[in-house]
Image (tube, rainbow, N blue to C red; front, top):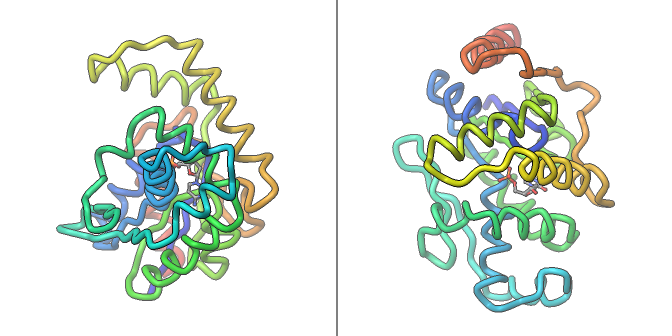
Length: 220
Ligand code: DC
């Protein structure tokens, strides 16, 4: 088994980089953020106030969350229903950041992530993969970019999708999420001591993928 942990802040390009690297390596790409998003979606569907930790925890009772992999693509199933698309809204993003600060939510998802890793060569991305979920990963990457660059990329992405985009609002949101993710008490976003720092601010997508693959070759 070969396990690659990729952590970093929102918008650093983790998922697109990890997806492409996994494809080239023939590894499974596991997007753990999708799990936190699904917990948030499930609670929202039940009308739960996400500030109320006990209610969020109660919403997990009898809830089945699973990842399925088809042709290298991850699908997330909530009680058997494919919610891969509905977890991508802004409301769910903000909610995921909230529920991910609840220790019982992290515990609920911990075993799931461990089981997936135990069964395959994978590239897992998230916030605490190198520090908590896979502390013995064969390669750990901390992928980041400046907040301004991450906001700029999101802005371009939104415009390409024909969505309304306000750069200042996006930058404020990026900073807010960074703050929440790095300041929470449990499993805050931080670089593992043995992780390689990849700052993509001035790198192209292909340069980052190539560097990652080069690091994998050095470890294998
Ligand atoms: O990567 P993402 O935007 O889909 O993640 C959604 C939220 O989940 C984000 O606010 C951070 C949180 N998260 C986490 O706490 N730990 C992970 N391993 C992955 C995501």
